[in-house]
Amino acid sequence: MRGPDAVATAAAVRDGRTDARTVTEEAIDRIRTLDPALGAVVHTRFDAARAEVAAGLPDGPLHGVPMLVKDLGTEVAGLPATGGSRLFADATARRDSELVARYRRAGAVVLGTTNTPELGLNASTEPALFGPTRNPWSPAHSPGGSSGGSAAAVAAGMVPVAHASDGGGSIRIPAAACGLFGLKPSRGRVSPAPRPTTLSGLLSAHHALTTTVRDSALLLDVAAGPLPGDAYAAPAPAAPFAELARRAPGRLRIGLITALPDGPGVHPDCERAVRAAALLCERLGHHVTETTAPYRPDDVGATSGVLMGADLVAQIDARLAVLGRPPADDDIEPFTRVLYDHYRTLTAADVSRALRRAQEIGWETGALFRSLDVTLAPTLARPTPPLGTLDTAEPESIYRHASVYSAFTSVYNVTGMPAMSVPFGHDGQGLPLGVQFGAPLGGEGVLLALAAQLEEAAPWGTAPGPA
Image (cartoon, rainbow, N blue to C red; front, side, top):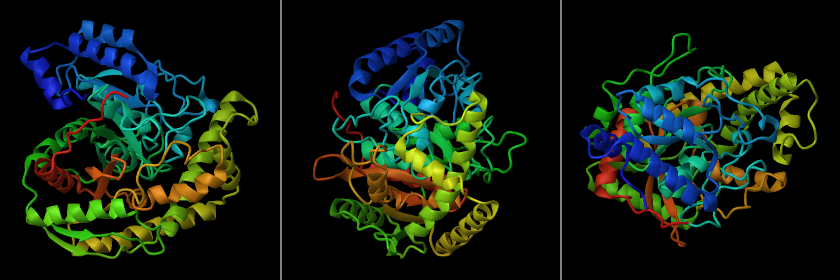
């Protein structure tokens, strides 16, 4: 069962009701007990964490809070930085990423890193390097991806919060699959330093998976803010996110989207959940209107594919240059190989056209917010799939299924706008469902305030039992 959230944990340590050493040891025990059945944690630093606690942690808002970091794009000094790929299996992080350094300066205790599909290229977490992560609600099902390891760890109660990242839905998809709250912040809200992906990785954003809205707001306050030299930054919030989350959202104009032009059919369970969420919003005083999405998911996917594909090729080529050799047959998984071979044929003009199209999609989607404050849609068009449905050893299967699981999420990566998945109900098998709210650039405060209102009106505190 889940324990106290990060806010409550830090308060208990601060008030002397417990101490950082006890909290750390309890989290280590939970990881050792629960993770063998789930496969969520891939590398640990328990002794180093103990030493940091013994030496004295910074007196910040996360003082004594144990957490995990996703093994993709954000590095923990001294731990392997594999990205879930055999090509990077022996790579080791020399220093903390800026985000990890901010967590540490806030007093967090980093216990290890979590599983991810190879280079984040899947909506399920089933890498060949470490094997699959299992959903704590049902070990036969996926926890989503690419932040599936982080989601499973938080959902199972190993740690109260975990870092996550989102390049096409990779925070929101596992949040929906595991019954968690997942906010993808605005482009430029969190610095990617020292990885120079601000311009090359336009789609990806870093934040966290949490059980409560207030934890997400607190972590965003810790993480947010540009580093001098960042290529761009999101608009500054009107107040700390933790404060914005406590404010009443007012009467919001909400656009309900239940289908996409030429998109996948939405499963009845997912449509029921989003319509029930719309009714709750109306009961809370918001104005909800049916809205037509101004984008086609295949267009968004093609644009996203070029931008992610170009970055993928650069990343793999840079690693091969370090190794001083051409790619071996078993370096990368079959699906990754298909993408690499395809996208290495891109021209500079192809990338430029995709960037232009991304801006056009941004304007087209942004037009919604001339008359709306937020949009509401299913997070996923289908309930959480069984493990093996998104098997990267079978590229054809991935192509058949993957776009279904990112149809509603990817547009917010292409546009850079913030979006969140809020737990809302369960499917016919008792697995969690999520509904997604989106807002214009810089709109995290509105989303957090609405999420906190929904959390109070329809609590989602139910946790899965031991796996």
